[in-house]
Image (cartoon, rainbow, N blue to C red; front, side):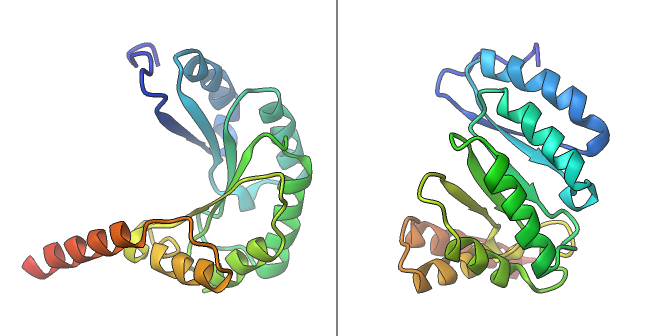
Length: 180
């Protein structure tokens, strides 16, 4: 952290941490904030936390001036009902000032249904970040594809994305893959 320069453009840093790294993350986050960074907390493998551990973490994070927190289903192991409960715990207990991120993997092919659940249960007081990757690239089983999120957003008539940029990136990625 000491090597990082002060943020002059208000850059964003996502602090990802596992359960055994919570104390270190809680120590680092204020240091990053003091350097002018926007900070998001990403508790990795959130499915391994108990509800009590999640509530304790949320209480700790609520004390900080971060921008948001993500539900990170690292292994794609969330079922529909577990996700609904987890989303409810985060949404009801997290400071309303924080954005809530949703980072899903496709292990059980439920990501679309989980995104639809979030969109059907939006709170007008909270920004939601739907985190995906182009072509679903990422650690197996792969992230939810950005293209899939966009098609779901279109069903809800939400058009706060730049489709031309996504298509251009997809085209460039596919062109690179075809070279190899």
